[in-house]
Every structure is written in structure tokens, then in C-alpha cells.
Length: 223
Image 1 (cartoon, helix red, strand yellow):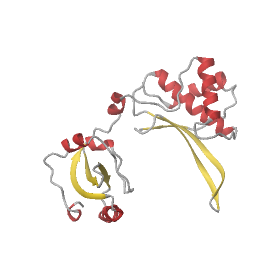
Image 2 (cartoon, rainbow, N blue to C red):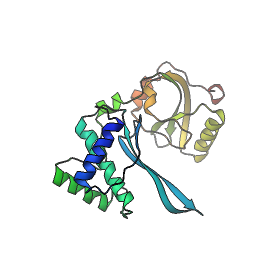
Image 3 (cartoon, rainbow, N blue to C red):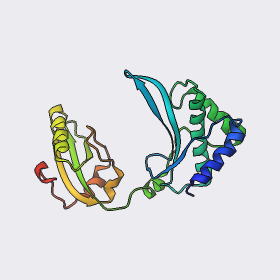
Image 4 (spheres, rainbow, N blue to C red):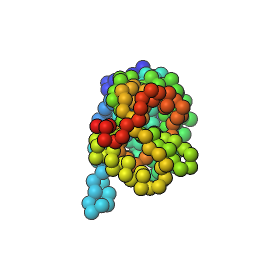
């Protein structure tokens, strides 16, 4: 099942009356195509001189990227409604899913027979199903570290950003080798593209299988 805005709004009203004594204010409902989350509460933060002085524009988002059982979608909506409740009532918690959140979640699970969890764990099949299957161009860096580990990084199609990333990593002294590849593939869509100074430690035998027959290129020939 994939949720719709009217469905989520109806469930919000139902659970608000049943589990939250009707105290929750309505919030804007949005759908997304994100593969990184199933449900999410977002808000904007007002800052003055670097200090947070207020939060506003609370929104509830549900991803329709994954086809999930209805009960899982319901539990996700309830999870995000707990966040809404804490946010709207200005309750201070120990963390995002701290003591207050966990106590509310435990009460709802106990009293209403739900299975709300701290985070939604997708199965391997669901994660694979949610991946973007379109063939796209990628620039892939394979990094060999001095301790023997290998990782990969997908970089943007920007020569200055690639050069800066390469320069910082080499100056760190942690990398013994960096090789760059340019290719078109759907498999590499599972990794994010950015110029952040990090790498992903994946199954490198599988990564190399998708690079087979593709020669590494110097940075000057990537873009």
C-alpha cells in the first residue's frame, strides 16, 4: 500500500481522537519519494545571534517510495504524531527519541495493540524495491586506505569540487591510493552523491563487479 494525503489526514484525525485526546493541532501533510525514510516530522528553526529562539512550520511527511503493509504505514503515522505531540506541547525530551517519546510510544503500543518502533527497519527486499532503477552517469572514487580498508565515494560532476575533495583526502595522509571512474549505471544510485569528505564501506567485491572493464581516469578527464 502507498499512502495518499487524504488517507494520512483521515488517520491523523482518527488517532488524534483515539490516542491523543484530540489535543493535536492539524499539521500540513506532504508526500515524498525519499528512500532514506518512511516518515518524518520537519520544522524550521529561528535563530538570533547563533542561538535557537523558536521553531515553526511543523510538517508531517510520509514517503511513498516503498509499498508497505497498511499496518506499517499506520504505525509510521502514529510515530510521527508522537513527535508532533511533543513539539506542539513544547515538552523537553532527552533526545529525539528520548524518555518522553519512548514512554508515549510504550503507552500507545500497550493500550492500543500497536507496534510503533523507534525507527522503521526496511527489509532488504523493500530497500531494493525502493532504489532508483534509472541508468544515470556517475563519477566513482575508490579509496584504498593505509590500514588496508577500501571505500567508495560518488562525486558531483564538478571539476573544482573533485579536485578539492582529492586534495583534502590526500593531504590527510590516510589514503594510499585513489582511483576515479566515470560510468553510467543504475546500481550506484543506492549511494548519495556529494563533495563531503567521507566514503562508504560497502562490499567491495560487488562494487568492483560493477566496475569491471571500466578503466580508471585521471581527474582531468572526468568532467
